[in-house]
Length: 462
Image (cartoon, rainbow, N blue to C red; front, top):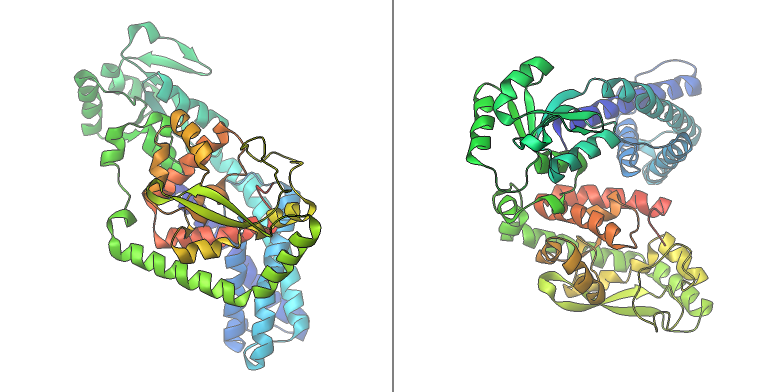
C-alpha cells in the first residue's frame, strides 16, 4: 500500500479543490478576455482539457499535492508559480503548432495568473486551516508493548501532528512497567485488561508495538479483543503505511517473510517491461539532448583540469560491481586521502560542479549505464563498496537493496534530502526498502514525475 486510506482521502480532497479553482480561473479568464461568460469546455474543449490537466500534473510534480506538507508560505508561492508557468510552456507550444486547438496568448496569460493565485490561496488555506482542524480529530489508540518498538512509534506520533492517531496509553504485561509514564502517555495495565481499559478510555483500536516473539498469553488477550470488534494493527505496518518507509530497526526476518508486497520481484514479465521502458527512455534522452551533453562537457573541461567523465566503482544488483559514469564535479585527485561523503559547501567541488550537481546534470551520463544494463531509471542509488562494507555492519537488512538494479533516481531521492552520514543512510534505506517492497510501474511513474520537481528546486544537491 503506497499511502494510508486517510492520506489518499485528504490528497483527493486537496486535488478536487485545485481542480475546482482551476476551472473557475479558466472561466473567469474567458470573461475578462471576452467580456462575457461562456462555457470553456464546450467552446474550447481540447484547449481547456489540456491546460487543466497539465496544471494538475505539474502541481503534483512540485509536491503541492501532499496533504501532510509543512511547506512555508514563500515556498508555496514559488512552487505554485513554477508549476503553473511550466505547465503553460508545453501548452503554448501545442497551441502554436495546432492553432485550431488553442486560444490567444493574452487569454492564456490571464488564465495562468489567476490559476497561480487561486491554487496558492487554496494550498495555504488547506495547510493552515483545514488540515490543522482535522488534526484535532485523531483516532484514539492503545499501544501494546511499552518497550523500544512501542516507544519509538509513540515518539514518532507525538512529533508528527498530521499523524492520524492519538495515543491514550500503553498496555504491557511487565509488572515493573505498570504506571510508568512516557511523556504524556502511561502504562495503563496488562493486556488481559484491554477490554476494560478500552471501555474506560473510549478506545477500540490497538497497535502492537512488540517486535520480538510474543507470548501465548499476550496473543490470546489481543485475539479476544479482535473477536470483540477491535481494530488490531502492527507498529511496522502502520508506520510504513503512514510514512512511506520501512523501520528496519524494528522488523524481523519473519515480518519480511510474510509481509505483503515484493510483487515485481516475482513477475518476470513486469521486470522485462521495466527494462524495456529503461532502454526506450535512455535512448530517447541521448538522442534528444546531445547539445546539453556537449555544453556540459565543454564547461567541465574549461573549469578545471581533469577528465570530463568521472568513473567510479559502485555496487549493483546481486552485489556486482560496475563502473558508474558522471560528469566530473570535483577537482582532480579530490579523494587522494580516501573516500568520504560529500558535505555542505564541499571545497572539493568545482564551480561548474556545484551547478551541475544542483541541477542533477552530473548524473546524465548514467543513461549509458542504463543501456549497459548496470542500472535502471528508478531504483535505490548505487553506493560505493567502501561505504557498503561499513553500512552493512551498522544498518539492518542493508544488503536487500541489491535485490534490484540501482537507479538514477528513486523513492528515497524524492522523499529525503541529500545524506552524508550513517543516520542519513539509514533513513534513505528505509525509503529504499519501502520501494522494493511496493515496487510497481505506476510507482516508478510517480517517482519520475516528482524527480522533475526535485531537479528544478535543487533539493538535496551538494
